[in-house]
View 1: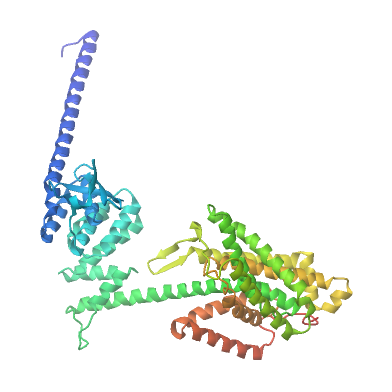
View 2: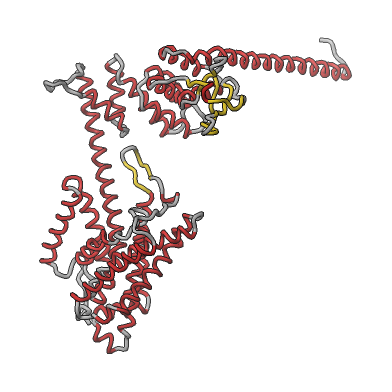
Length: 565
């Protein structure tokens, strides 16, 4: 080998570098030309296919939309979506296809703003009579939805992929099977894989091969989506003679086992859902009754206006939202102390103005507080509205926590459940750890002895009634997120509140908690087979029998006396 001097080595390197750059530039140029050819090719395809959508034959239209969907160009998706949403038109003058980005611009002149369907370039305003909509029917729209979903199952955005597969689940298009299997091989998200497996199984369950069908049926047996159960019900359908329409015995046997698994899971999650609804109702009853438990236990007052104090709390929430229309989430937080103060002050005024003159006369107290409840209802009707008022639910209270297709719980009920427990803990802390709580417990256990020890029982009565009323107002804030806010809101909860207090034991917060949750869960488990009204009647009968055996409730009050005046 001949030795090359170092200076020539540098020259050769320069030559090699120049040749490499030239080669690269040629490759890039070739790529650019290739891209331009591809773009030109797809544009030519769009230019050829889009005008043909004007054809009146829907079978031909279905073929055309399938060809459009096969084109790898974003404009094809835009055109298909426009056709799906009835925004694809053609101009009568030259038969050119146009898009409507926005519906009617000027109602009087009936003008529309149109865009070129090939490139989305704005054309301008035209009279409605100069354009005509390209017609669609249900079958065509279903085909377009499926095709759009097919293109989206490989989208980079997981939410788009999930929405696409869920759209495919609504149909049963066997032509999507290859695309679904291809998407399954590259999918990384486990929940999305489950959806893809379900979509594949729903198609393969109608296959000719028995083993393929059985594998698909077994997979459907692990799914809680309604389509899976519906497909199994179809396989196990019978004729008028009670015979299975399906002829393959192995398929029938596999489907029966799969359906049994689904029904067992649905029963389990159905019971869990009922339990949650019972706890949710129990938390509402706890909020409504906990204030009554204090006043009834300490003062022996049957306060029929307690429901209206709850109602005042709900209306306070409405008024706070009116003052803070742009801060709905914050307004709900502000409404909690506001409702406590408003209802608490009303409670103190009721106790100081009327009830303190009627201690020891329970019947007259009942009649007086019933009259107050009517006055409060009429006050709200006169000052605010006789109709229900709208209370907006914040975004963080909207929606549901979805565990699976058969079990989901709403956020507002989750929050209210924990809110009720928080109020319970707060009230328990006051009664156990503060001087007011000590005096309240002393008066509740033995009023005469408490007076002899220098406790101002009238002052304790007022503050206790105000505390119980304030908690009722806080209950109204929670109820405003669950039910209609109107003058009669409190009437729906007053009887239930007394039932909780009597069942749990007066002036016993733990008894109120247990009683509220027990009655809530019992009601919800009775409702499916007894009905809402009958379930309440059954619970009431049970309470009457229970009180005959335990007059002081689950947790009877301890002390020398019941706290009478």
